[in-house]
Each structure stands twice: as C-alpha cells, then as structure tokens.
Length: 326
View 1 (spheres, rainbow, N blue to C red):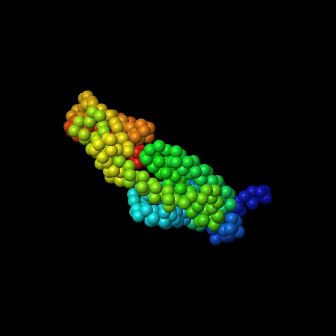
View 2 (cartoon, rainbow, N blue to C red):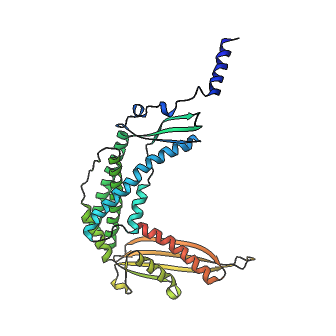
View 3 (cartoon, rainbow, N blue to C red):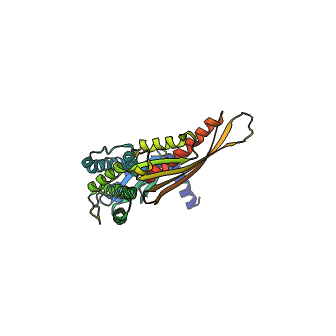
C-alpha cells in the first residue's frame, strides 16, 4: 500500500478517536503567551467561535464597567458636596452609566481553538496595555484642550444661559476625562493630564447659574395653552425656574403650534391629526441658543385625543433634545 495513503488513513483514525485535536485550554500557558504586565486578557467559550469572542470581550468590558461607575460616582460626589447639591440625580446617573458602557477599543483575539472533547470554541481576547495607554492619554490631551477652549468661551459669553451651556460642556468633557483616567488605572498605567482644572469651582458655578436662570415660555396659536403648559411643566421638572412675566426672564422659550385633522378614510373610523411644533430658545441679548422643530402624526377614536397624542410625541422628542443640549 502506498505510504502516503497509510499515513492519511492513520490520521483519520486518530481524529475519530479524539487522540488528535487542536490545542486544549489545559495545555495553554496563558501567562507565557500573554504576560500580565503587558496584556489584560480574558477567555470566552461557546458553541460558535463568534460568540466565544463576544463572551471574552464582555468579560473584559465587565472589569471596566463596575470600576468606572464607582470611580465616576465618587469623583462627582467629591466635587458636588461643596455645593450642597445631590450629585446622584437622574441626569448625572445617566451620564455615568452611559460612559461606563462605552465599547473598549483595541481588543484583539490572541488565541482561538476548538476543543473536540467539550465541543466548544475557546478564545483568549487581549488588550495591549502600553499601546492602549498611549491612545487613552492622547484622548485626555484632546479633552484638556477642549475644556480649556470652553472655559475661555464661558468668560466671553454675554448671557447667563450661554455661560451655563459652556460650563455644562466642560462638565461633560470632565466626565469623559475621568473615564479615561479610570480606564488607565485599571490597566495599571499612569494618566497624563495636560490641564490642571479644579472642578469644584466649576461645578459650584454650574449650579449657581442654573439656580439663577428664569425661563419664560410662550407658544403662539396654542389654544388654552395646552402645549405651553406641558412644555413649562417639563422645564420645571428638570429643575429650571419659570416666570410669568417676560421682562423678568433670562431665557425665552418661544414657539409656534399648528394642528390639522387628516382625512384618512379608514374603515375603523380612527381619527388622525398632524401636529407641527417649532421651538426657539433665546437669551436676553436675542442670541438664538437652540431651535427645534417636530412634525408628528397620531391617531385615536377622536380628533381631540389624536391631537393630544401627536402633541405629546412632539414634546417628548423636543424635550429630549433640549435636555441633551441645555
């Protein structure tokens, strides 16, 4: 018999008996392949290789998430205590949890194999500590530059609301910077900051500016002030003070409301209404701070209820944009 055929048959026999298989987990010396001083690593397994990779990446992500939440909460608590404000309100919590779930870039598959006995794929995902530290410190540098620019812009801003918005941008950037600093500490690398900013004073000023602003809301073509009242209530719920006289306001919320019944000719007798709502936010110097417009359609058994649903759709969308920017 041909020698090559014999070798081929023997190979098939060994595979069928399980004597031949790819590298097993127990045979891997992970620390030698990916020394802890250089790499952060995690393993994952699944019936599918793609899922094994996702599981390993999730393992690393979980290391960061809990520590980022704890560290950012502590940082915010430290700077906000001096102002006497409760730092753990809904807005701050959302910011912290959003930053903690950011995808970790730079993860690579260091080793992948299939275990014939367990019938699973195994994967080692690694993060190069030094390469990652270089990238994250560069991010900190860019955030420092942006913070400095917004602080300069705040000093030049004419109105209370513009000053507030610039400092809120600084706050957002500061949280991002703290996130990168925490990540660097997790991988045992030193954060390098290019701008030394005492955020306690900035946080106190943000709180002071927000408490001093007075909002005046006026919506044109708004019968019985139904849109105006809901919009004003939303501002109040978000901690902004409202006044009923325009000359006492620092911020003007102006808008136009249009509603029209739609002839949909449906067999179920559902009534449909289209609502268009445009909102402008101005300061006392007539600077246009923000401008939003929404156009929504809704249906119900009556035109009145359909209109209410469409109004609520518009307001929900507009308020989410205002909350993100203001």
